[in-house]
Length: 54
Image 1 (cartoon, rainbow, N blue to C red):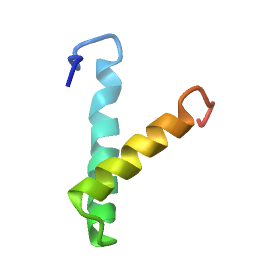
Image 2: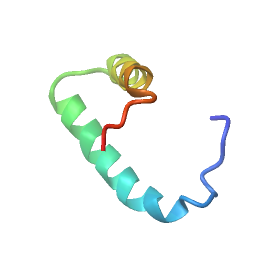
Image 3: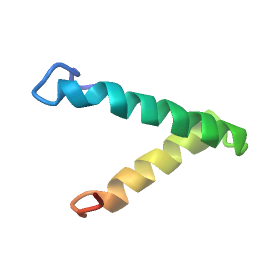
Image 4: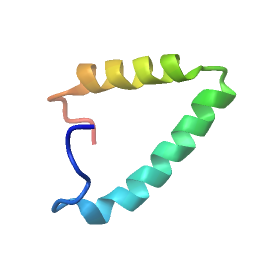
């Protein structure tokens, strides 16, 4: 990790972390291993960078 979590968006971290934990649990239940989860996450981050996906 190259950045800390202490910045102006700190208030949003709790709910986002909770959502991410749920997503990770779903991914594991779907049979993805840690490497596959990381690949899916990183690929999604790269392909959605710059997109307005709100």
